Image (cartoon, rainbow, N blue to C red; front, side):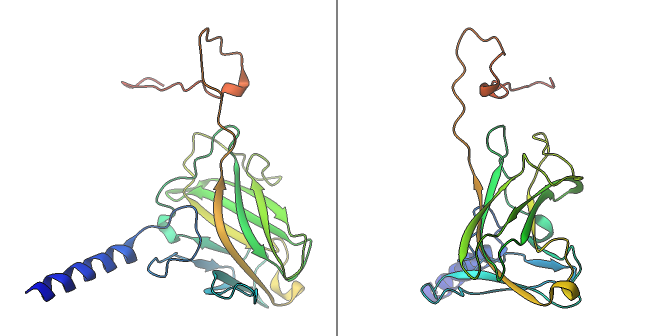
Length: 218
């Protein structure tokens, strides 16, 4: 009987792990978690070992942008459900980082976040790689969106992310290229100063002054 209870407990824990929703930071180190990697536009992604021979135990994502891939080919993290909690953007805290291992320097990497329930609510920004076949941490500042795309709206829910390698160039033009990436994180800004009397609402450094509505106020 004890063995049966133990087996049931282990089975239940395993199921919970498999059903757990992805959340930031995403490190790709939990083999019991379904990261919901979803390719589109011709990309091919898989979780694999680190290409750096000095860190073979590290787990990363390998994304191939092959011949025939669209210029907008990308990979979504977390599947249709997105992250367990929204990206906590606020004034002064608008950045995310991703570690990238690129075969070419000067490659535009685009990161897009959106509302998993309403894809019309999105914002996207880009960063350029600077090294070849070497890990670097790219910073994506969503307060600086790509020209022609929507701006960051702090009232929106952003709980889903997609990454695009060599955005704007299709696979036939660039040839097949392989990228590795890891550690998708939100980068908090410095804490806002505390509000104190007198409150004049004249200091932009205080953000929204912690205004909190209740009872139906807006």
